[in-house]
Length: 172
Image 1 (cartoon, rainbow, N blue to C red):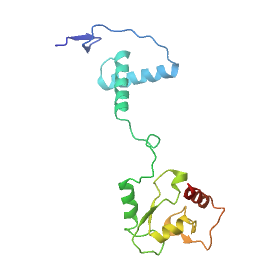
Image 2 (cartoon, helix red, strand yellow; image 1 turned 180 degrees about the vertical axis):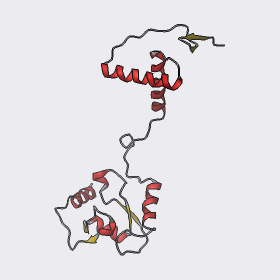
Image 3 (spheres, rainbow, N blue to C red; image 1 turned 60 degrees about the vertical axis):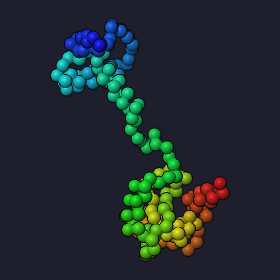
């Protein structure tokens, strides 16, 4: 059975002695540490030594390491579209092709802002197979805008950056 010890009124379980660690921090970091200490003391209504404050900070960091929060930067970017994202895009267009005036059921999911460029699934839209081919041929006018504003271009603009990326991606 572990014996309990106290240091400045705080129980220390299983520790035989305290260790002194000395390190230097810049003024800004020291100020942040003191402010954190004040917040803890105000929250617990107990005077808290810096060792205990550092322990609380480390506990928070350990939880982050064990269960890191998913951020855009930490998530691996893949072409896989999460089911929920896909479902929301399809529901916004009632399961139909998003191209104006088309009432065919959707067959493909399209990235108007090309995935090769933007690496995001935020703006995906459901399209029928024909309109998806038209989109990748670079024949949709105003494709970077909402689908309601889309129309078919009479001919492909070969200087269009998206069209050039599509051609490059198809070659790979």
